[in-house]
Image (cartoon, rainbow, N blue to C red):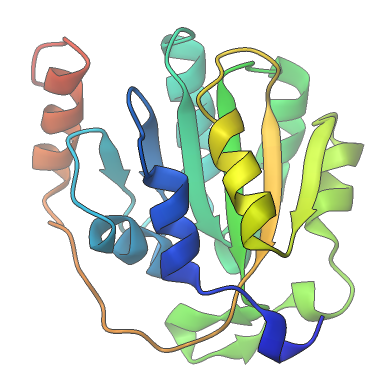
Length: 196
């Protein structure tokens, strides 16, 4: 795909979270968390700090614990590459309410922009399918982003996986709170549970 045709990541994330209703969103390490906050801080946002590779597994745990709620993981290609094993577990468990959107700029943005494996050999859609996630798709247009955004509201038919090819623009960081206790207690309260 031509670099000129890559999608704007903030527009992608904003589209995924527009009209979110009951969606609980987990942001992977780095830019995806910043992009979620830029789209609007929300009590149903779970921001992942310092746990690279864990976003999909946190999403799986939440999806299994709350099967009537749509759960969306928004993460980057580097974070997903570190947590590839999670796709096998998700494919085995098959949570119908879980959707994963990978923002793939083919670079490790948090460590200096080095080229990631998705620029050459690693096919994340192929890996997700091979792990048993039947609804796995490559997304290269905003129309496809909008279609995926509609699907995430369903609590049946999942799990879903989308690898979204985005540009590698260096955008201003919109940082959410890094207070993990606050984030956990806020989302627990939003879902009707007592703080820890």
